[in-house]
Image (cartoon, rainbow, N blue to C red; front, side, top):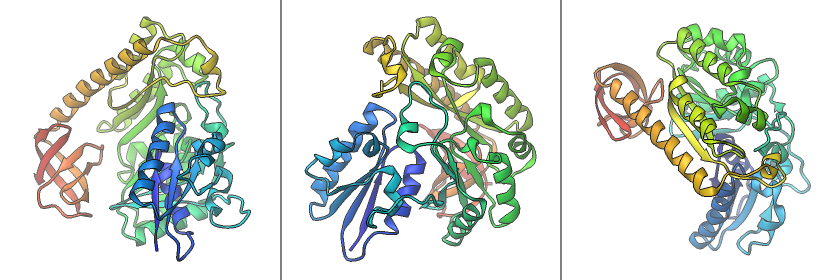
Length: 388
């Protein structure tokens, strides 16, 4: 019998689903759907995934957990395909009677890359976000437990560890200090990567690692959300546009080969055209080469849902404009890599990423191989390369 996982949304969901699956009951077929509630579209995709899973495996029982299940339990309980709904507070004891969640590091081995959870929850109530309602306050996992989880993933064959969570820069004691302790404690860890981080929370210890630690991969995905100060204020973000630009400038000064990714929301309530242009210009001002663009989606019971809304066609058009500009910047960056030497990790047969997260195709390369390559060309959004 088997336990299958289907995860939507953040990497933390993927890592947690794997941990839940390892506790699944013997002798039964289950499908675990770890849901996402970051946008209305994510909730719709969760429902769709449940229906598709049921059609594909009608004899398996479906368990739904995660943020969407936490915020709207009744909706999922009334779906005929669903056997059980488990709230976030009980997800790690989903198959135990009356269990309450005991936070534990979750590891997800994805090819040769493993995502390890170090934190969950959030203390910052951004006006557009309902995740703090779904996951509760910020809680950091103990260092010893994280260290042991990383060791287990390395023993399972992971070549790269990605630290993940809801707000990992809020880790107790500082994310940089956590990374320093991990790298000192585990010499086998040669590639450490970070998931999305809040630029205003980057601590001095992390800047030190950016400066001189080659085992910390030089790609940083920042939760920026907007490039206009009034929009940022109405979002209840804790940084200004100038803060974001200065953070990127500092990263680039310390690590010239570092690349920047970012989350950006288009069409936030009250956003004018001038405000939208400020977000558009942030792509260049922060040298963003990997952008996740979200059209604003009003989430229930959030302050932003009660603000004056931008008409949907305008939201859609502004998101499309941001995506187009982001794609042009990304294409230019990938083209600039042609003819250079880069270090890569092969994550699947013949495909992988450079240290600064450019996707690579390398004919004949085997999963788990790592080393220097020469970038030969660009095929769409993937670089072609040969061993250097």
